[in-house]
Image (cartoon, rainbow over all chains, first blue to last red; front, side, top):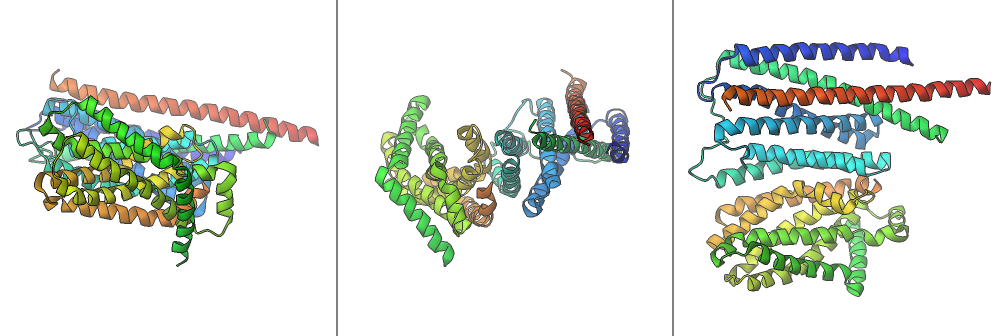
Length: 235
Length: 225
Length: 51
């Protein structure tokens, strides 16, 4: 048994290693090489975290959707494991996105929080998928929890465009005139090394994401095996 | 049509039960009214502000009242393994969904029909002629609530801490409905007509149609879980 | 707090959180592996005894 998992372990290790390399290069580029933004100054560097974070979160939620749909269709455990792992990581990266957005907002808009469209939407996303995780943990029966979560995963994903629309309408129709428009990203010129920093950071995040996902997936897989073995014994 | 026939069967059963004991509708009505009182004391608004906040307060009251109804929705089926019996029968699952959604919708509408005018009186609002438009908005919003709510109610049927979990998973997904309903109501109260808010109305309609369809299609899986 | 203060706050929190989560995952991973090996070896022992 152990021998067959070794090549998988090795691949994970390589992925992790690559991730670290990309992340470190990304950090160097973001903090040292890329020049500060003409309007936002050094604070703009937070965007090298913020954009990859939110994109990774979106990727994660898409995987939750795919895993959920596949699970309802084929009932294969691995799809459910994928959905669960992706949901957990999605919540992590969404929380990080909110924190980064908030910290960026303080020097830029003067406040730690504002109910602008982007931040609000990210917060809602967090609530939806935190609810997904809660649903899973509160249903005792494994397969029931998986089915229920799969449905929530699908409905949540389908609702996101509607939520997106409604929040954006809400924010753009009721913009108080005296306040800065926080929806617009004040990037006038896009210096090539800004783009490079962004690209490298993004690659680092994605590699890191898949590394963590593979770990989390395996943990879920092992837990299931443990449960099955315990059931067999009646232990 | 088989679907409608089945829907009617289950719905009439639920309505009959409710007619006899009136548990749900009475508790929902009293809870809705109670919320109005609590809001009044909590917010202590000057008369000009009330009209501004009225849609939000009203809709919040309906949301929480509706959640009460949702929690009770499958109560009758949970006892005595009725749900298993129901599932063993050749009943179309989509019909079960439509029936339960309609049942909750009817309950909520009954409550809203009474609470809305009551709200108008208690908060000293005028503009009685706008009530029909407000009812339309409320109707569409309530449909959206009942559709998603029924799915979530069934989904959380066997979860622990169900009373807490249900609103937790439902409310974030309801945000389009909440925003749309309140904005529409605001527009009606301010301008006497929908005007720009028509796009919100369309969003509401779209929401209702999408999730009604989704509900009918996937309720198989929802209820087996 | 100067601009670099905010930048370090953001980068610090994010990477600390990711590292902590990674460590947490590794811990769960090792725990699960150990438990799995324990169960499998006692299963092997039990079937060995049966023969």
